Image 1 (cartoon, one colour):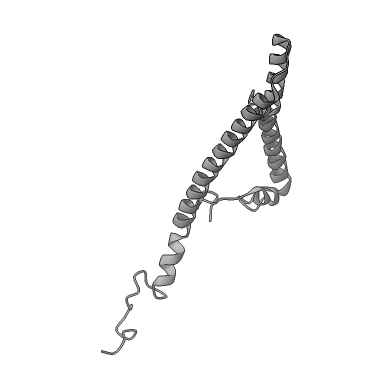
Image 2 (cartoon, helix red, strand yellow; image 1 turned 60 degrees about the vertical axis):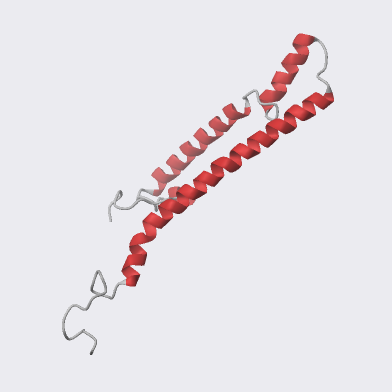
Length: 138
């Protein structure tokens, strides 16, 4: 089986062990470390967005307080942070729902060959006997 013969969904463990594409262990570890670095950098940038629940939002609140020279009312801050937290969690659930649907669809496509082979008789593609000797008596 070649590298691109079948579509496979492999996680971090398969990448680290190198089993997903037969690569060497050192190369797999280097790729996993590079992937983790990219994920960490992306999360750091995402955390700096000016959304009140994230760190960037706290910086935004501090800048607003600095410019206006007065504190943001506690109730306003609570309402804005709660609304943003609900939006972020809703967005995460939305993305997760469609990811699970996509993974289920790919899994069904990937395993469709296995179910077709188990339904057919050994040695045939459609389950029909291959010769008259194998045929069942009438």
